[in-house]
View 1 (cartoon, rainbow, N blue to C red):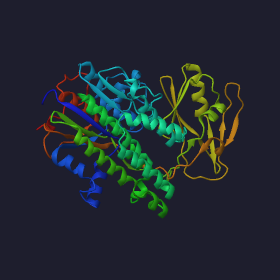
View 2: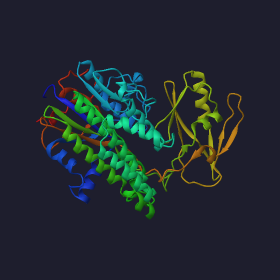
View 3: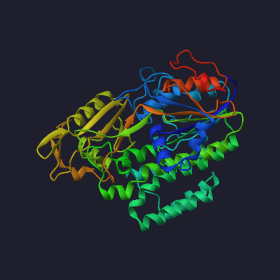
View 4: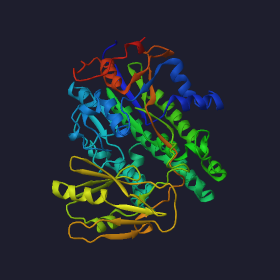
Length: 478
């Protein structure tokens, strides 16, 4: 295999070939021209995650892809888990230790950023605005603020604050054309409020502007860029696009409002792929990966669709269970929150209390929360609903001297997502290689997310760590 090549890894979370193929079949190759070019002029494979439920989550599958070892070895289990608690090196760490330059932008579990030859911007669910170098913190600040405002865990910046942020972002690479698209979206929302779903697409556009400027300036030997927008659209709007596999068909107004969201998201992936083509040179391999895919969310329990229940205000909930011992609360993907509780005894008490919460809906008693523990972090998730009926009530057990407490659902929770859950994780995702040294039009044998890290290190001429469990995909090389 060729040595000392550079690698640019484009991470489109949870996209899959099945949706790409269907969109090309239905709308023609001009709808996704860059994915067509990727397969015609590159090498591509069906890449399957080695994880199975309940481990089939992106904060686990991406760490497997970046480490080349299974979850039992790397230990990742929480979104934006502190990388110091992950017990395996990521690809960028191997590259940095070899004395070569690195650029990481948005990859899962890249927090906290570490000083290296290059740059590091963690994902938007990171617990702080820290970046390396510090000059990139305005990028992370707007990323986290945007994500939290979208998930209704924070407020969007006001007009004057937005103007100040805008000036900084223009200096960091924000393109005037992207500003026009932002303005056009805001106007569109005034005319058609339901079109707010398109706003999710603005974040990857902004981020690719910043990344492009950084990449052209630094020309790192190894770089990553991550976007979750297509996964978001599939999770929320798959049935609106295609309800053929669902137990309940998509209502007409749902199809009318959101039926184009999934194709729109893949179209944006294609646009960004085209921009990535223009970033690389003859010494660079462009790699496109998704770590796993998605499929329609079908459940007999939630035959009409799973209604997402989110916490209205985390402080109000903590007033109910008691705030003592909780040093940090971090919102992750809706509807989850991470609670940091350093004291083991207090952590066990909070975990038992939340695990004991009961919800009564239409005479049926069921669990109110799912709670998991990783290190000193509790990940809490309100359980979804099969039906929204009047009079839903939550009972919190007596704990730590507090009496049993009952609350109407609307006091603590909201069910305001525009649709029910419509997409779920699937093992089959995307992997493709493109560049001067890559075999053209090669359909590679099926592989797994364990195979990506050793292949990338091999392409860069770096030695393969003995701990890695995957194989090098030699058949991708010309």
